[in-house]
Image (cartoon, rainbow, N blue to C red; front, side, top):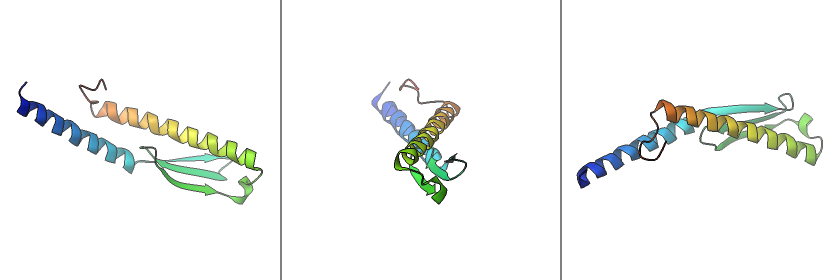
Length: 98
């Protein structure tokens, strides 16, 4: 493969990666904990967008911390699944083993 074709392929992969990143950034995931007293919103690229904590969730620091941890972990798990599904739908990134 010539140098020009390699550069063209790299440009194409970079454009595909940017499009993929933007697709993930645009998709929001909302997770509730403690019967809706805690709401975590993250984007599919795992950036925190919003945190809502109702006064009813303010029980103890330890309990609040556990509720937040579970909500964040659930949101991240969902975001990772969405990213994997979207990458698969886009055909992955050949040459990177994806």
